[in-house]
Length: 148
Ligand SMILES: C[S@@+](CC[C@H](N)C(=O)[O-])C[C@H]1O[C@@H](n2cnc3c(N)ncnc32)[C@H](O)[C@@H]1O
Image (tube, rainbow, N blue to C red; front, side):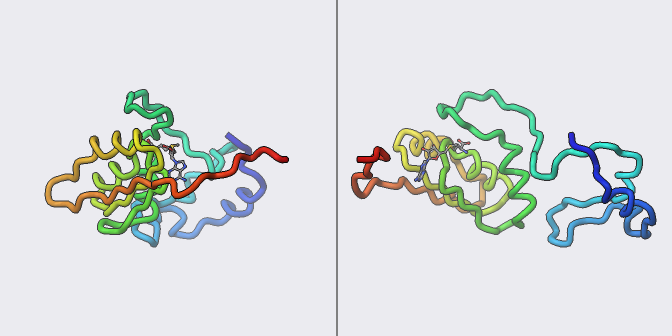
């Protein structure tokens, strides 16, 4: 938590009618805000940190996202039928969540083992398009970062 800062004194001094009710986001994401909720608060969560429950499922990948993480962004930035691209798909959590939320999805992964994990676990919900998955093949040899 961080201190609210001076802005709150000025902003909360005189509230409009809209500030007193929940004001839904104009992009139709389902998010919204009620400015009056800030009255009396001394601290707030920083706006660039999301607090989500840890998940402990073993999905044969060392860095699996909690499903709530992609869900938060997919809900914020897309509508049903939009496209979601995860260029670092890993076990496929983002693609899985995108499908569950009725978005189209594309996932790209460079390691064949992880690609297989995603491929085997991703089944499109009935009546939806299957996700498009791509295994990036190494086209050449990359130089190491060592200086000469
Ligand atoms: C943090 S993990 C993603 C985990 C994923 N969100 C999940 O829930 O399973 C990042 C993935 O990106 C892959 N990756 C790294 N470099 C890549 C590249 N250049 N192109 C595609 N995938 C890449 C890694 O192999 C790794 O599986």
